[in-house]
Length: 321
Image 1 (tube, rainbow, N blue to C red):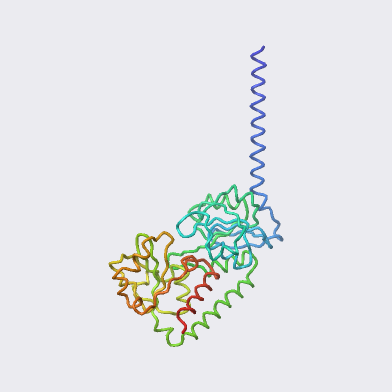
Image 2 (cartoon, rainbow, N blue to C red):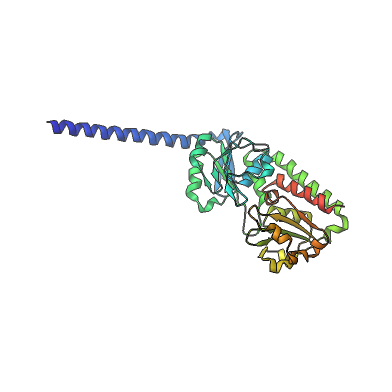
């Protein structure tokens, strides 16, 4: 009889554990899906890289999963409640210096490509934005979509960075298309002003874009970064050798020459001064003529119109006499 009572007691405890586990699981599931329970009148359908998503009409709590999405949100007047960033190939959780003032107070939720889902869930976002390649991480996109409507954009199509397309896409998703048009028009007006200020030198000043890494020297290819896209918008010519972008050593540094050189230093490039004092570097025409301009590595590697306008500032500063 004692064994029978003990058996019933064990069965009861097991049944209770199952009930409690089911309740917890249901609670988590409800937390994940409650953000998506919107009436058609409360949201608008947005088409994007991963399909269609119904985004709240007036989103207030935005989480971004990369630097470009962070900058786009800030450009449109939003301060995200959370961001996962990985800038400068150094460490996770770094916000680029040129965005830090605007992004003060934004909670860190992991690094690009590896967001912390638990932290994102606690922030109760209205919408999640990402230009990261989530097409290869379908399960991650599904998990994010259970937390909040998630909108993605193809940042790199194999030829160019689609920074302007992603800006317009996210502006639509956030209901800020009119504000986006103003931003774009202001940028285009500044490009036109720079072209007029450059005059005849616009078509005769060959620009070289150089970034020094710890283990190599990189010539920026056309369309591969926002800095090269802005140079292209302005219409400044590039060396044919830089069309695709190449890595080189100091022994082949002659390919980095141009009428002017815009120089970026990777944060870990402790060989920077060694390169700049090397006899082969000192033989470059741009170096001899004093036409090498050191620019901010963060915004020349940026993601939207804040960076683009800072790049234009540099072009006005160094190229307009």
